[in-house]
Amino acid sequence: EDEIAQLAQAFNEMAVQLENADAAERALDEARRNLVAWASHDLRTPLTSLKVMLDALADGVVDDPDTVARYLLQSQNEVSRMSALIDDLFELAQLDAGHQEFKFEWITLSDHLSDTLESFAVQADAQGVALEGSVAPQVDPIWAAPDKLSRILDNLLVNALRYTSGGGNIHLNAELVDNQVQVELRDSGQGIRAEELPFIFDPFYRADKSRPRVDDKSGGVGLGLAIVKGLVEANNGQIWVASEPGMGTVFTFTLPKMAIESGQHAGEGL
Image (cartoon, rainbow, N blue to C red; front, side, top):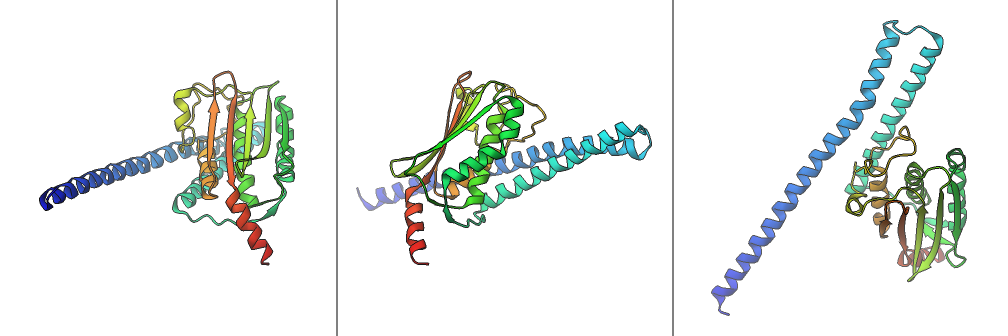
């Protein structure tokens, strides 16, 4: 209990902190290297495809009008795919840096969810998937950033449709739970294995081996759910997932009641 013992304890605590900081720095460096490697891989694939098709067109190897039109359409699709990937990477970088701008306003969540489901109705119809939604009466209105909320819902629905086959269903509902707005998206898709659940929100993570996609052309490079998590947490909310193979998947996120109350006070002062 003397001063020497206290000094020794302080040194030991400092050594532990330095060791933890070093481990965190190494983990961050590894994450950055992985991010660059994954992004390079996912950009290289459409670039290679695009080069092959453009070379064939430029060299005159392809001159049949139907084939030329098909190559041009595929080239446009690859350009769109790369553009979407770059946009996702930029948005993820902004979220990590805390530079995302949130413009809050009063919105009716029931209308917002209805509009979101309507925008996916054609795709769901083509797949034979039923879309349903419900909002508890006491939820509306809410103080939220509509564009960010749309991005969250869109990414979750794209993911659900990607892994839900014909005859399945997707249900989106919202309610108040413990003074929080809780939004739940439940699908009847293939589900996710327990060992993969902790990584489902990691950038570029794709559990394709256990979750065969309904349409392999549906895109996705593993950034959609990472962006969802970043947007939810930037709004002081939380998100989690529950799933079992063959039993479907449930994504749940919250919007804090605190944010709604502060929004009410801000609105009253306008």
